[in-house]
Length: 294
Image 1 (cartoon, rainbow, N blue to C red):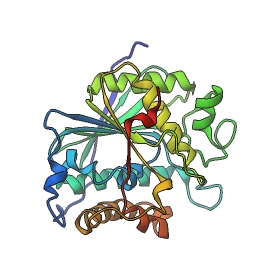
Image 2 (cartoon, helix red, strand yellow):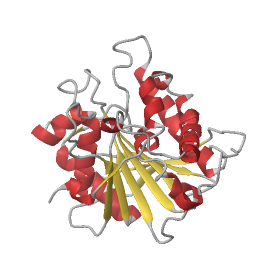
Image 3 (cartoon, rainbow, N blue to C red):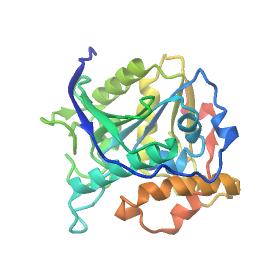
């Protein structure tokens, strides 16, 4: 699919005024290959912090090129089960993830934003002003927990499994109906644009009996499908399924992971509490490449 260029470019001035003092340097994390360029594809704004970290931190701390793509807006049932404004909540989550990356990078939380019109699914790209190698990309598709999406809940899964046509929950207007092939084409266009050497995503085939969030699983399938035929090192990480597994991060790594996540969670009222967050902050479980299948 042919892609078009930048349609809109604006400056965003959300400022975290105090540069962080991180708990430790994490030299082994920073020691990523200097030639590598990273792309992460996840479902929600916090999946990367909870399930791919501290691996994720190496590129940010080491000044590598890193782009994280969030497929859903992450609104969930906000505004359906409570009185909150779901679009404000989406904005809060995006502000939280920007603040977390800026904190980790040790710079002010100031970003430049632009819209990329990539086929039928335009995306917003936020670039960290003080370190333009760090980018966050928001596709704005409906969260799986939102019953207001076209056809109801599990919009991303229905797009993948049944070819459902779904409109974005947030993003530039108008909101055309997009299908599985449109999401794959947009991801492929982003890969072509940013030329990653490493693709990180979530577990595409969780085996544990209690399963994972459907959005996590399907986002991984979209990520892998878009990468088909490309020369990429693909890494996957367990999501909810690691909750009951043994804690496997060092005290230092867990402390850094918690410090970064605390910056994010100040913006996310739904992440304000919960024992599972404490569990995830002490764990990270990468998966062997064969998890992606043939």
